[in-house]
Amino acid sequence: MKSAYIALAALGALALGVSGCDQSRKAEADTGTAKAVVSTDAPASAVPNSQLETQAVQAATAASTPVDGSGPVTNQTPAVPPAAPAKK
Image (cartoon, rainbow, N blue to C red; front, side, top):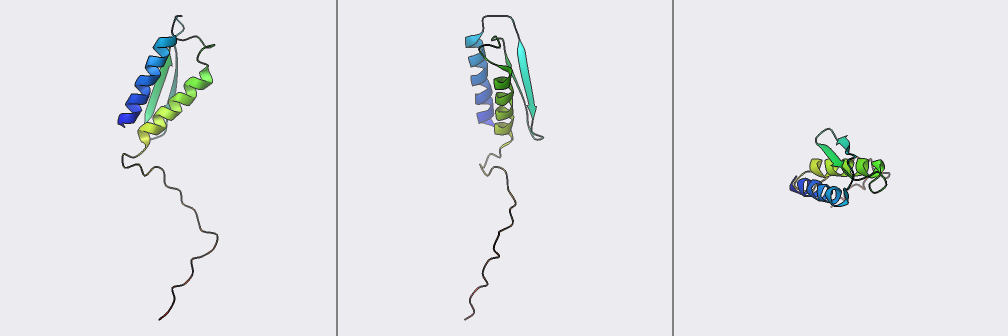
């Protein structure tokens, strides 16, 4: 969660560094467990809308990742069943 705040702060600093016009824009993302809003005053030529949307998704995903680093769980059925244990 802390890294998400750092990512959002970095994005905000980037937006402020590139700003020069009064064209405020924002993008929002919701992963179901976290929401993120990324905004900038930079012109679309410097920070396209697609980049804003991507950064919002990345920030929301980072915020919704478990602290233990386990990440999302994928349930995959093995193609070959495991071998039976050898009998002694």
